[in-house]
Structure formats: C-alpha cells, structure tokens
Amino acid sequence: MISNKEVRLIEIPKIHDLRGNLSVIQGDTIPFVSNRVYYLYDIPGGSKRGGHAHKEQKEFLVALSGSFDVVLKDGQFDTKVTLNKPNFGLLIEKGIWRELENFSSGSVCLVLASGEFDEDDYIRDFDDFKLFKNS
Image (cartoon, rainbow, N blue to C red; front, top):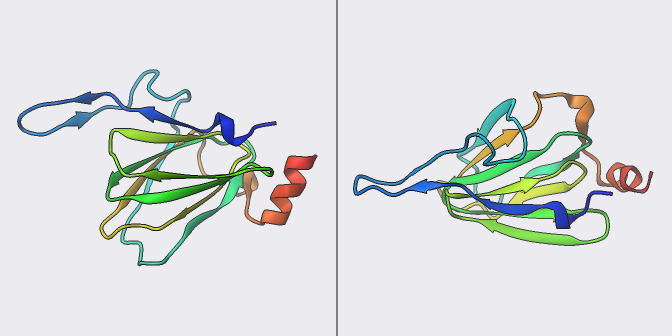
C-alpha cells in the first residue's frame, strides 16, 4: 500500500549565474517519464485545487512562483508540505489524496504527470478513496 512516506521533496539541479538561476528537469531528476505538463495560476485567494487521488498516475509539483500548501492523505495519516522554492518539487505517488491550498498572490504551480489525462484514473470522492485504499 502506498503511504505518505513515499511522497518526498526532490531537489531540482540549479545552475547559478549572475544573470539569474536556471533549473532543469531531465534524465533521472524525477523517477518517471513525464507525459503531461500543466500549470495552475491566477488562483483566487482562499481557493483550493486538487481534491483527488490517482489510481496509477504519479505527479511532480513545483512552485515556480509564490507558494502554496499541499495536503496529502494516505487513508491513515495527513501530511502538509509547503512548496515555495522553484528548485524543489514534490513527488506524489499513485494512491495519495492531494489538496492544494493557501496560494500566495501570483503563485504558479507546475505539474509534471506520468500519464496523459484519463478521467478513469481519478478518484474524486474521498469516501471512494478510502474504499480504494482498503481494497
């Protein structure tokens, strides 16, 4: 069973330069091949995003700008991780419920996903998620 222990922060290599920093996600930076990239932005104050789990898909979240909290639930434990550095990302394994909240003004959340969009891979109801975790 996948638990919050499998969720981890991964440092993205940073190349420092007087003109600014550059970070690159390639090769084995993350433990999966990204098949979909999307980003969240212009999120109104007080709004929440996420509120689902994936049956098979893994995701890697990066706060490109600003900050936000990621609330993770594995069916037994809840964990909250604040993302606020563009050279660190959060690896979320399959079977973990996630909610994004507390977005700062101007925040941008980049998501690299292991699969293309597939509605059948989503669990959008928390009671269904608990049943999925207990099966």
